[in-house]
Length: 82
Image (cartoon, rainbow, N blue to C red):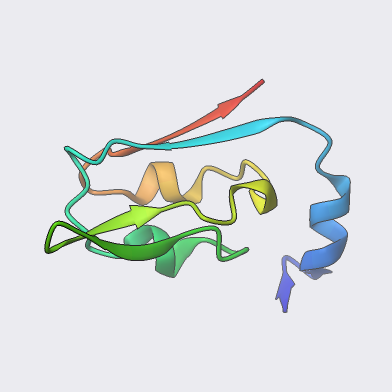
């Protein structure tokens, strides 16, 4: 898989920052925008009490591009670089 002419593994190995991905489950409506837009498949939708919610199960792969944070129509995602 490529992103901007670079292979994803190359992008990942360049990430030296600690990145935390937070999803506000109260705001998340399970639309899947984050799943669709994330270049590294950080998110999956999970069923929580009968409602789909975004879950950053592969948070360690996040490169901090903030595509998900900017695209989330509910403002439910926060990317924190430490």
